[in-house]
Length: 572
Image (tube, rainbow, N blue to C red; front, side, top):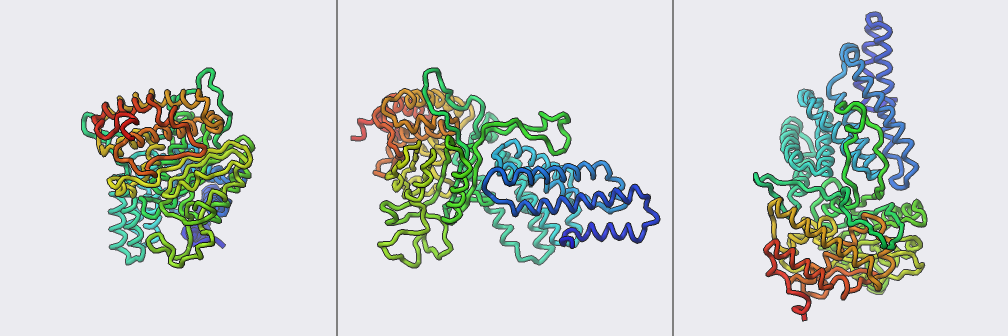
C-alpha cells in the first residue's frame, strides 16, 4: 500500500502502462517504472528519518547516507529523462520542486546533526533554485489546498535557512512573498490554519527586528555582520602558554524563555549561541568539479566543530536524556556545554534553587497554580545537584537566568575540569524592556561589541567606526588572553578548557562583559554583575586597571564615556 501523496504518481503510471501499453516503447515504459521506484524509495527513506534517535552520533549516519544516495539518483534521473517523464508520466513542475525541497531539507537536517555550516549553503542552493525556476508556480492554479500548504512550508523552511545564513535582505523579500501566498491561500480555501500561518509571519518579522543595532555603510544600507568563528578570529595560543588539550565535542543549547522572540523552535538567544559555537560556512559548490550545477555535493573537509543539541522548552526528562546521551558519547577528554536560558525562578530546591524546565502544569505569570509543600523540592527544575553525575567528565556550563546564582554553590566532586559562567540576576530598569529581544548576557557572549553598544543605548553606527572599535576589541581580547594564561591565581579549570577555540572566545568575552558592567554607572545592584564558578580573580582580571583603561578607551571612541565610572575608585 502506497501513502496518500503517492496516489498521483501511481494513477499516472497505471493509466499509461495499462491503457496505452501498446503505444509506449519498452525503454520509455522502463524509464517511468524506474522513476516511480526511485520516487517511492526516496519517500520511504525520507519518512524514516523521523524515526531515527535525535541523540547519539553514529546510529543515523548510514541511514542519512542511503537517503542522500537515492535522492541524488532520483534528481539526476529526472534531469536525464525529463522529456519522457513529461510525455509519458505527466511529471509536473511542482513535483520536481518537491524533490528539490526534500533535498534541501536533507541538507538542513544534516547540518543540524553535524553542526557543519557548509551544509546550510547546500540547502540554500536547492531552496533558491525552487524559487528561481518557479517550480511551485502552477500550484496556485490547482484546486488542492494540500499542495498550497507544501508551498507555504517550503517558504517557512527557506526562511529558516536564510536566517541562519544571515541573508536578512532575502528574508524580508521571502516574508513579503509568503504573506501574499498566505492571503491568496486563505481567500481561496476556507481553512482553519489561517491564524497559524499569520503567527509564522509575526514571529519571523519580530526575529528580523531583534538585533539591537544597525550598522550602516556610506550609502546608508544595512551591513550584515557574521558572528560565526572565522579564521584568525580567536587570540592564538602563543609560545609558553600551557593550556589543556580538551576539545568541545557536544553542546546542549537550551531555551526556556516564555516571552522571548522565537521562530521555528529557536529563541533569539538559542539562535545567537548556536552561531557562537559554529565556524563560518564554506561554499561546497566552489570546491566541486562542476560549480553552479544543482547537484547534491560531496562532504566538506572535516573541521573541528562542536555537535549541538537544540532543546526548546524541554521537560526535565528530555533534558536529562540528552545530557546522558552526550555524556555517554564523549570520551574522557571531551567536555560538554550546557546553555540554559530561562527567566523563571525556583525557590528552595536542593538548597539554593535552580532553573526551571518545561512542565505541562498550568502556569500563571510564571507561578505554579498549585503551590507545592515548601519543604519539598521543585521537581520541574534543573538543580546544580542534578549535574553532579556528569562532572565525572569535563563540563563547561553557562547559565543565563534570574536564578543563575544557584550555580555559584556548585561542588567539583571528581576533580575534573568544571567551569560555570553565570549571568547577572538583575538588570537596570532602562534595559529590562529589551529582554524580549534577547538577553544582554548572551548578547555579550555572541557579539561583545553589540553588547557594549546595547548597554550604551546606541542603536545605529557607521561601518567605519564599527571596524575601528572591533580593532580595539581585538587588542583587548589579546590582553585578556595573556592575563588568563599568565595568571598564577586563576583556577586550573579555565586553562584546561583554554585550548579549545570556541571556549577560549567565550571565556574572553565573559571577562570583557564583567569589566564593562562593573564600570557602567547603571549597573549598581548586588546581582548586576556576571559571576563564575570557580571565581575569577577580581583584582588582576575583571577589575584590573588595564582592562578598565581599555573599556574607557572604547567608551571614548564611541562618545559614551559619561556612562562609565572613571576606574573602580568611583564605586566606593
